[in-house]
Image 1 (cartoon, rainbow, N blue to C red):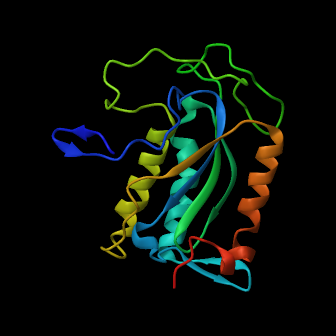
Image 2: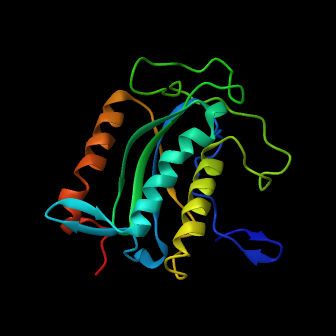
Length: 193
């Protein structure tokens, strides 16, 4: 049963407990539109054709890395689909997460096998900054602000899915999944008619 916050039921967090999402690591994220509405375009012959809102999402994602140079972000594979967005984002070592985490060569900064247990924050519902949640929040706000000038109904689902990429094999598998997403659109579980 969900916990109550301010006398209202709330859904438990989908985030990995005791993991600091500001750590030097590679993350796979999926963000869906509200009701899985097809705002971003269409897949035609296995290729994604972006709509005006899809182009906004692409521009805002690319801006993400310029807006946060202090977080040492690296862009991995990404794809904008008709009603969702997949991306790999790597948060590199930076002034907010320096504490001896493993740095790998070339493709990704992966976390150590056993994640450290950070001290419990005084307010777990407090502001999130310099971490994955703040990056995704900024991206979603940027897209929403511009997209609603084209379609006032545009909205994201309130949450997003994330996966901490723990090794190179997983990194490669997820890259291939992202790249092949348009050609596999007809079988995609996120597809709605």
